[in-house]
Image 1 (tube, one colour):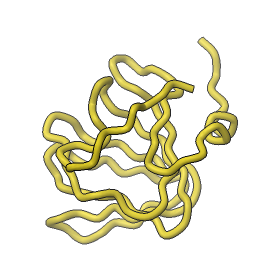
Image 2 (cartoon, rainbow, N blue to C red; image 1 turned 90 degrees about the horizontal axis):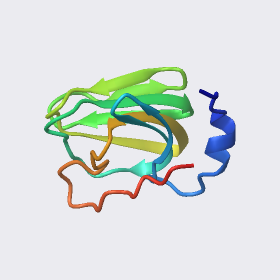
Image 3 (cartoon, rainbow, N blue to C red; image 1 turned 90 degrees about the vertical axis):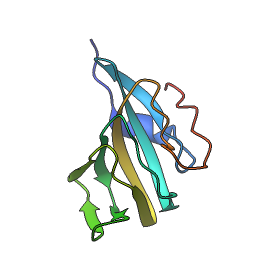
Image 4 (cartoon, rainbow, N blue to C red; image 1 turned 60 degrees about the vertical axis):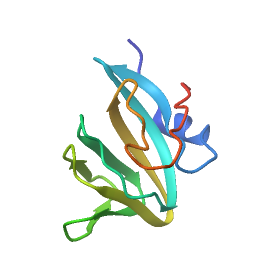
Length: 118
């Protein structure tokens, strides 16, 4: 039962699209990630996808809906089965919450990240 210093944890992340586990919440991983550029379109068949933007601004693009801008202090939950991709022109920091073992790549051809614990 100790607090997690987000700025300290984010300072330990130097790459993009590489989520790092910072805490456990029930059967979920709480992670931080830095993103820039665009991730491939993908979906998660068995879980929703949670994004809380900590700094910067990202766009969540959907295959069958208009894109959604998500700014620092805002969150978006992508429902299971919805094809989506996050993208960002400049570096954005994000908190993710996913069930343990869920690949961040969903059903895309991109290899899932290792999700190291920091």
